[in-house]
Image (tube, rainbow over all chains, first blue to last red; front, side, top):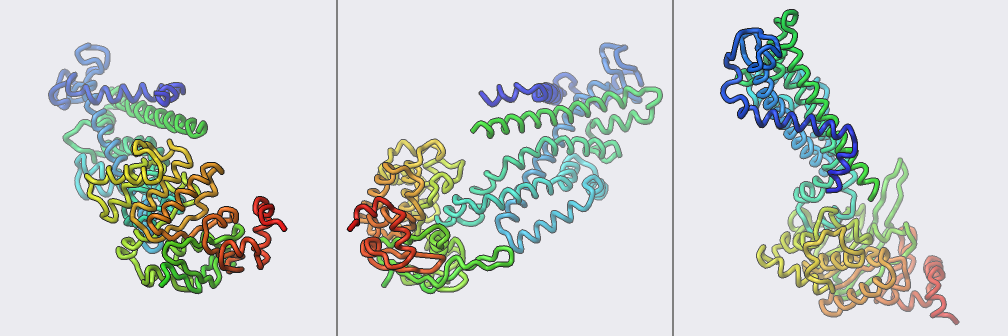
Amino acid sequence: MIPLRRFLHTPEAIAGAILLTALFAMALSASLLFPGDPQAIAGPALLPPFQDWSLPLGTDRLGRDVLAELFHGARTSLAVGLAAAAAALAVGAVVGTLAGFAGGLVDEMLMRTTDAFQTVPSFLLALAFVSVVGPSLGVVVIAIALGTWTGPARVARAEVLSIRERDYVASARAVGMHPLEIAFREVLPNALPPVLAMSSVIVAAAILTEAALSFLGLGDPNRVTWGGMISEGRAVLRTAPFLSIVPGIALVLTVLGIYLAGEGIVETTAVRRGLS
Amino acid sequence: MSLLAVSNLTKRYRRGGKTVTAVDDVSFHIEPGETLALAGPSGSGKSTIARLALRLIEPDAGGIEFEGDDFLALSGSPLRARRARLQMVFQDPLAAFNPRATVARVLDDPLRIHGIASRSERPRRIAALLERVGLSAGLAPRAIHEISGGQRQRVAIARAIATKPSLIVLDEALSALDVSVRGQILDLLLDLQRQERIAYLFISHDLGVVRTIAHRVVLLDGGRIAESGDARAIIDAPQSAVGKALVAATPRLNRSIGP
């Protein structure tokens, strides 16, 4: 595994990998370490951290275990972040490929639609969508994807415009391949690398958007979210600031970890390209 | 009846307000089993004609008749079906394949698209195709970028003959290969032509190779036909300025035809 070793040679990549590993460990172990409902009352209200070692990070206004909430919140953050980014990348790559490959009227229509989505601030779009359709995990994922697919679409289209002039696309046509098969089997896979390079930024942005939506009370009410926890803690910010600070730090470390790991991956592939 | 008859073909490009005529009123025909060479300096429109003949780009004027039908009138699925009869081998054997492809996938595509062999039968057909072009059947699972340039060009030829075409356009198909490999590929092409009666539209700037493989030659200059006729006669005694220049640029030939 030479690429892995090269990946681990950059300090920021190691830091990112450690943060991400911790995050995934939290998300995966949430229901093992904290079985039962994280929103259930576990002790006295507003217990400060590091007082009672059965509740290491204390409790919130209603007496819920902050550590359990943090672990279960990692699940929501990761699930929404990854699902929204995957949806945005998939839609963006398909739209960009069709626009770039078909050209003409199809290109014009798809790219003007992309423009229309880009002119609306993506957070407002998500906000409006969730308030109309109603808050649930799936809706939040769609709402975030709605505002983020345009970037991948533009990058994919630009890449496809250069790829479609290559000889192997001409030879696929000469063989008699259907244009849709050429677009999705010959062109799209080769246009993907620069699109995938955007994924870390998109995942990080999606996690932040999800937190912001939850903070405004538009998250899934049946799930613990970090944004919701910060929002809860806001009411007692003067007396119990740790209730906002703990999930806030978790959010910062998560986004930082994703950026650093993404940067490390880009760096690794760049070195490999430089060598060949 | 000619296999391919091109009449008054014209193609113009617009570049920054200027119109460049890449192919200007070109007519020629190819008979079944014959090799016609298109030769000329770079920029003379050879490759544009190849792409026009394959309908990879559309002409501005002129007609193309292939196997007795108006080739320009076809579109959509009938056009894709007819492409089986008219194949192409590109100059750069690396650029002509999807960088992610394996040898097997490259050869599987034409067999699948034109319904030539069933899924279970295809691995055997692929092995047979590889052997037909002088490669080992064991090459099938290898990635395209893992094999040598000469092997790649053989795979390109295997892909071209997979659909049993009547005409193969060879666009500088030997130019990117080194000299020893070039001779082997040339022999393979001649052997295929003898056995399957495939006609070649052979595009080249190398009159030495043209003289060995082509029956007739069309010399192009600036998108127009400078002269055309029997390959040996023209190369031994070119009449046009471009023909003389091309022959003079081939030192090997100069010596062999000396006074």
